[in-house]
Length: 129
Image (cartoon, rainbow, N blue to C red; front, side, top):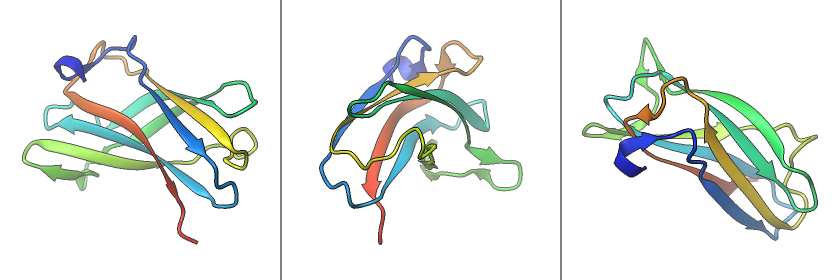
């Protein structure tokens, strides 16, 4: 993130090519921040464009910390990385069709820009069977 801040106008885009349509997949949000991040959650819109379909919008509140345990992340020094599983409505998005899938992340937190954010990303993995 430029200057460690996520402006709402910055909407990172990620593309994945799916060729194995028999395997189930798990989607993850990767979120990195420093110890000065002010919130115990993250609100965002996730836009998903599947092959041959219109884009679907999902509004997500993702927990990052609890009062009891603190950050729910791996950390080193003052940096924390969250790997949060994202479950989408299978009626709207599934990965059973071969092709390119596009994901766009939109920050919808009240703070503008969102401070102390080091990076954000999407990871897709085949689920163990």
